[in-house]
Amino acid sequence: MDTGSDNPEGRDVPRSPGAILADERERQGLARADIAQRLHMSVSQVEALEAADYERLPRGTFLRGFTRNYARSLGLDADAVVGLLADDAPRETAPDIVVPTQNIRFDPLGQRLANPYVKAAGVAFVLVVLGFAAMYWWLFIRPHGPVQPTAVKKPAIEAPKVEPVAPAPEAPATAAAPASAAVAQPSTAASPAAMTMAATPAAVPPAPVPAAEEAPRVAAPGEGTIRLAFRGAAWVEITDARGKVLLSRTHPGGSSAETIGKPPFNLVIGNAPEVRLTFNGREVDLAPHTRVAVARLTLP
Image (tube, rainbow, N blue to C red; front, side):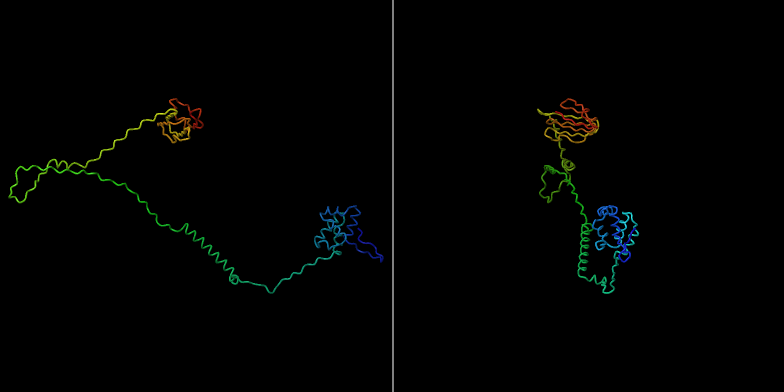
């Protein structure tokens, strides 16, 4: 590798790394754009390195790495070219580090706490904590007083009515009392009727006569009658044409039910296999309308 040329005085003048790289690039017929694409650099950076314009390039490790990669891409001895760069490029000087040793401000904890802003923040924090504590005590801990038992009002028991006892009739006097008698002696023998009435207990009011049972309702013209007999417990809900619920409850086994209303009727029967349905005296088979033991049907 040619690193210099003869000058008129016969001495070798060292060539810059950029000039060596530029000559080899031109010898291989490559443009600066080709080198920039290989190295993922800009064309202006390649141009600055070849012109030894180091002010346009970062110094130090970046400059040496850039030169080494450029030389390797051209097949040159990278260490030799980087060695020339050490003599040609300006050295990077380390920045001066100044450690201040005087006028260092030191604020002790006491002085920081004496700051009025710090005091105000501390007082506000304490007030907020106390407020939350008071609210918690008021909502969850505060006793709400003893629970007063609810007075149970007992039904008043009426005393049996006692009919007044009629006084016994006086016996007719058989002989006039002598005028000389100062005081008449009362009769010590009580009347048998008075003794019987006194021994008779208070009259008990007669028990109320139960009202006569209402006669079963008869379907009017345009209405229908539904009768159900339950072999086992089943739940039934029946609504009429107006959407009114005529029957909705659970019936025990062995019972029956009947309802009258305006058709059509919508029926939902639970445990349908245990139910016998009759509509206007005609038995209705629930099997075709049953799904998983629940029958749903409409009666016209």
